[in-house]
Length: 286
Ligand code: SF4
Image (cartoon, rainbow, N blue to C red; front, side, top):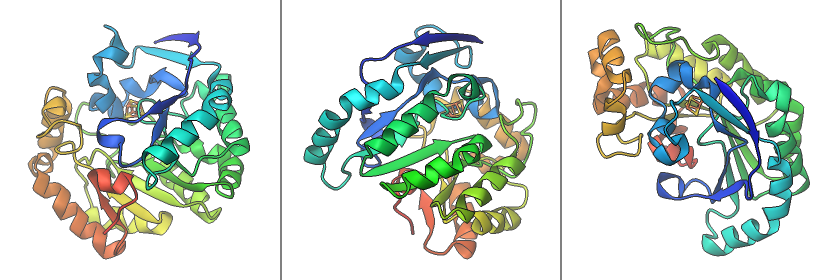
């Protein structure tokens, strides 16, 4: 794992492709991801971005964008005005993050995400979506709570399954239990909290899993790699080790009907608060 420090001209990236109806901008405090060697890294959609990888293996590098907060301040006004003109419905919405993890272990050394959140507090967008795979988001609960007073905010915490292991694949980057606890902390603080079951992995006990999510979250997103990974039929993910490992645990889980079956269970515990694939990430629930 190579960690380097770098700077960036504009930390606010205008979205394209599947994120366009979700947010006007994405914001990556880091380039690369040190969770790339964990379970979520096996099927991680970002690993297919050759431009970002530049020949490197996903999970082998992390670039720390040390001037991220400064860049946010410099570009805020221009990007905000562009976003509001470009799509008034989406407005100036920031998705933090879509191509890295904001609360990596390295964050405790570099504090880049924290500094960006402080800059956002001074100059808020219309809407902020914090997307994380880590329980460490709860370490920032006071700051996140304050941010929620400045803009529409929701925190998305990925919990893809109730199983600690999927066959021989690497373990989760952070324990499922810790992520549930983090959701509880956030929600108790009055922060809108959404569990993203993304990508959906085989679930051992769907009833208990979604009941538990309903206890700690305002809504749930269920995102299958088919229709979810940016290719029509999940071809990108089919090139990885994830589908075979999923099928070995539960053959039904590699079919889109599994997503719909899980959504039916989820709807019993979170009626009107289940989002499917990109609709869910955009806050469109049914
Ligand atoms: S935390 Fe997110 S960006 Fe990082 S490897 Fe996992 S899925 Fe990919």
